[in-house]
Length: 412
Image (cartoon, rainbow, N blue to C red; front, side, top):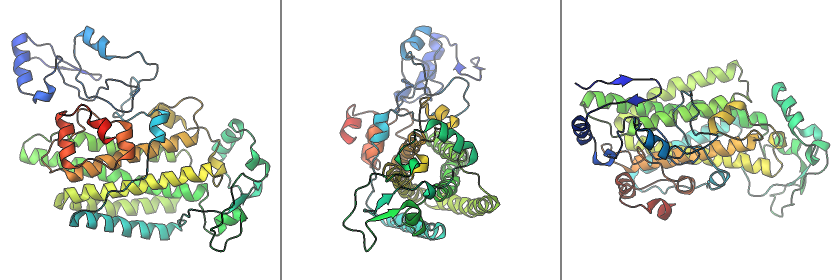
C-alpha cells in the first residue's frame, strides 16, 4: 500500500517509478500525462475564462512551467469556492441570445414546461412585455426610484452627474412604431404603464429566479452521486460540473442580495417555491435525466434573455439608477473584476455564466447518461459558450476525446 498524505491545499504523492507506472495504467489514457494528476481542477491559465484540467505534481520544474505570472489568479489563494470562469471584456460582449430548436418529444416537453412556468411567473410579477421600440424618455430626477441607503451613498460618490440625474432629457431616438403611445414619455410614466421595470422590479425577479436556479445543479449532482454509489462505478466527470453550476447560481443570488433586502413575504415565497421545485425536479431527474437537462438548458436561454434586457434598459437610459453603482465587493472577488468596475460589469458576468449553463445543460441533454462529461478536463472557449447553445452528441464526444484541436474555433 502506497503512503498517501492529504493536505488542504493539494494532494501530493511520492511514488517509486514502478508504482507510478502502475497508477498511471489505472487512469484513462487521457489522464496519462507526464505529471501525476490528482486534482483535476487546477487552471492552466488562471486569467483566461477557459481552463484546462490538470493534476498537481510534486515536480517544481513542472509547476513553474504551467504557473503564469498573474496578479489576479482565477482562484484566489485560500478561497474555498469551486473554480469558475473569469472573463475578459471581449468574453462578456460575445454572449448572444440563442435558442435550440426542439427536435424530439422530450425537447418539446421541456420547452413547454419552461413556457408555462415563465408565463405564470411573468403574470405574478407583472413582468413587462418587452418591446422592440420604446418612446423617447423625458428625463426627470423625480422619476428615479431610490436605491437602498447603503448603495445610494456609494452611487452618489462614484457617479458623475449625468443628464438623467440633472433632470435633462436623456438622449433617445423617437420611434415611429409605438402602437398608439406618445413619442415621448417620462420614465415614471413608462414604469407605471408597465412598459419597463425599475430597480425594485428587476431585483425581485433576480432574487427569486436565482434562489430557484441553484436547485437543478445540486439535484443533478446528488442523483449522479447516488447512482455512482448504487451502481458502484465511476461517474465520468458529471458530478463536479453540476456542483460548479449550483455554486455559481448561488453566488449570483449572494451578489443580488447586496442590492436587495427581501422581506418576509419574499422569503416565504422562496421557501414555498423550493419546497415544491426540489422534490419535483429530483423525481424528474430520476425518471428522465436528459429531458431534465434540456429543461434547464431552455431555462438558461431565458436567463440570458433576461440579463440581456437589463443591459438594454441600462444602455437606453431606462434604468439610470444602475448606471454608476459600484460593483459589490463579493462580485469583484468572485469574478476578479477591477477596482473601478460597475454594476453593469457584474450583470455582464452573470449573463456570461448563464450562457455557460445553457451550453453545459444542452450538451448534457444530447448525451447518453453513461457518456463521459466532455467538459471534465477542458472547458470550451468563451466565444463558443457565449454564441452557441451547446454541443450535439457527436461534437461532445469528439471534444471529450480531444480528437479535434481546432474544434473550439470551428464550433465557436
